[in-house]
Length: 233
Length: 310
Image 1: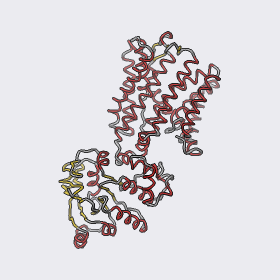
Image 2 (image 1 turned 120 degrees about the vertical axis):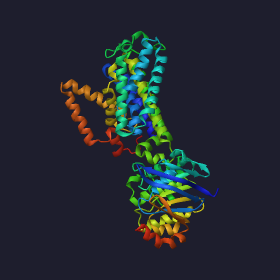
Image 3 (image 1 turned 45 degrees about the vertical axis):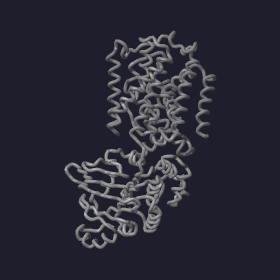
Image 4 (image 1 turned 135 degrees about the vertical axis):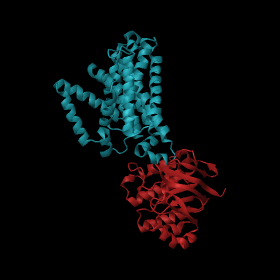
């Protein structure tokens, strides 16, 4: 198995509306795989079904060669998938350290501090997460995903709302994970995508529009832009 | 360390208080300790897990009737009857949890309220055994454990203190374990907690069973120590009391439930000695507390002076 994640015919219907339409997605082990497309293309719904937040209407999901379609979310996380939310979801009334200890599941203080060091927040370990700036909360959220040392890290628009300098820190952090962690990245910022991604899947109105290397997609981009109506990013 | 000192210190003060207080206050405090145990049970679910139940009287009542009926009709001795009371509360909590935890928020409040109403009506329906509203008295002669007469005020006080201490130390320890941290995480953000790999549904189930069992222990002890079993204790007001006590004392603090119960008991006791319109004074005090101490007494202490408070 070279694909850590594979979906087959994954479909999600919401009261007559087909949000995700028979998506076959393969994410190769070790890759940074970007998922792009306009708002409402079904990107978040798709990764939500991969992480177990919602059940597909049809289709199957394989993780590490194992069919996880009916596995509940918490069991998928324990199997090695980490998920970061599009809308920041840290524990605002708990300290940064407590946030990380929960993410680590083993309550190891040393590893929690190390994970904070990785995003440069170790000095604020005892502060409440809710007192951090928005950018720092995003970094904390990413740190909580990275700290789990997952085999698949799902990042849903991680750079949304980050300043340029923070984005470059984020890029460095993610590049540092290359090789160890497979990353499925939903991203609107095309600079980030082009800089990080090994492979890109373009989603539009719930279906896969294109799939290829950044160069392939970029070569295609003029056409894409015309087709998509507007480039996000 | 500080939290162990706090809890053991509180217990030490209560041990000493039992020797020094005049009979009237010793009697009051015995009752407060049993009701505070009920609050502690309620706090596990409401304060730490963030689930607001409006039906905890059914668990208090399950413990009370489990013990009461076993002693009154079954002829059981207090200890096995107490175990039966605990089992009834735990069993009922498990059943209610399986059904009610399929709902969240307001629906959960209503479902628990409905279950508790059903429990209340069940007690009335089987009036032949429960004597309904009128209730029944547990004979003084049967309320003995290993030669200790639980009707003796001092013995009763220390029996209540043993129960309270056990509940306090168990919950304090629980909140230091990962299990307790996950309960708080569920309260703060359930979806986030699920997406960190925790089975939040299982944690909520266990929290409700623990909460119901502690409440049942308080109900069983109340019947045993004060010798009376009646339907009033399963009525809706006994579901509201622990909510009020916990809110006043500080939801999600270990000693808040005791402080809230103590405060409320003496607030009513003092004001009702002054005037017939004591409920008005009680109301004003409660309004002031909600205005100026939103996190409850111990919650406010934690925010202002002692962030380490468990």
